[in-house]
Amino acid sequence: TLDGCASELARADTPETAPGQNSQRPVLRERGQREVFCGLTGIIWLHRKMQDAFFLVVGSRTCAHLLQSAAGVMIFAEPRFATAIMEERDLAGMVDAQDELDRVVNRLLERRPDIRTLFLVGSCPSEVIKLDLAKAAQRLGAVHMPRVRILNYSGSGIETTFTQGEDACLSALVPVMPASAPDAAKELLIVGSLPDIVEDQFTRILAQLGIDKVGVLPARNARDLPSVGPNTRYLLAQPFLGETAMALEGRGAKRLDALFPFGAEGTTSWLRAAASEFGIDEALFDKVVAPGRERARIALSKLRPQLEGKRISFLPDSQLEVPLARFLQEELGMELVEVGTPYLHRAHLARELDLIGPQVRISEGQHVERQLDRVRADRPDITVCGLGLANPLEAEGFTTKWAIELVFSPIHGFDQAADLAELFARPLRRRDLLEV
Ligand code: SF4
Image (cartoon, rainbow, N blue to C red; front, side):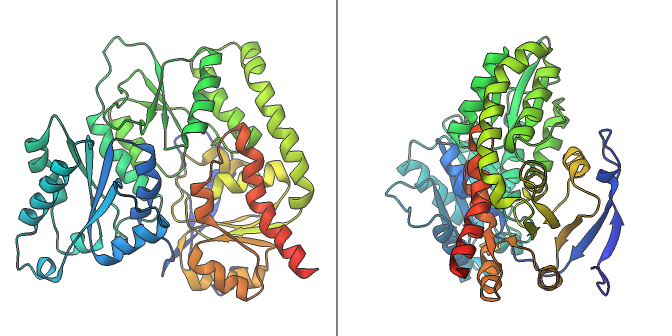
């Protein structure tokens, strides 16, 4: 119950697409202490995706520790990310931080000729001393272009949470995407970083449908950016890319409205949006898509008995919460108790919200104490939350799922649908075994 909770109950804004009633449902807005990773975390998956890019965090030892622990022990001889550590002298303004940064960047680029795109990534400390990384990127770019393109974005915990780091990084790439020719034919752009294997599956299906001009952002080679213009139709692969979407629309691209590609139905809806836009015949669509959809449905039916009727709460973390909740409810029969998300993009999530039952509590933002109180009152069978909250909740007897695992695992598309369901089934099985 929300009784006694001082949070503001606000009506959602009107989405740009034509939604049903549910996307305009009341949303519980929370503002308070947050327990979420900062946007630097995105570097962990982005550096694997863009193989000619390097991420230089301009930050403190804390930022370096975060990256190292989030990346596990994978500190190789030639890593593709690093932290330029700001010492007390920098923070106290005793040295010119811009000069220091130039020195570090010049040394790095001299030692590493394989770097073709360098991201200067802002952090809390660089923001606090108002170190202008946009200016630094421009100045250093003038020296190192065309060999190295230098861009900047912020991954600071003041400005970004967790997956917003990817949004900030991709929106920094949009202005340097080449412009498509004025008379260019319609092209499809997939937006959001996906594991290569999943990206290949999608491009293969799209090619079978006859859509073979497909660009991907981010590209595996960051210098090999797809072109963009009024002929671009884009499909979001991730629900946390609001800024990137806005930047693409600023360059004339149009979003194709669909469910996000999780589960058999989400993936079908996502592919169908492309097929309809590109005038693909319905019979061909069914022929190409049916085998994957059937495989996913059969694989999910095996896991359904373990998940059906189980009650689940999401604490706000990765912004994947709403589409994942829709998938668990629609395709596995789970009962949603609360779906919390750091930010709710009403237009991008309108279709997802339409499918989530009106009795489900949707919350946006975080007030960690209140949310934990609600988990204690609701007593869901499983709670999806960040690492810092999982252990204390487990100690109180709750079964939890780490949200970060959902970001690091291949979960999109038909062939990953059962793996995605399995991520939720496993903690419940473990709980049952422990209880026995
Ligand atoms: Fe911490 Fe801020 Fe550095 Fe993130 S950017 S690790 S929140 S100091």
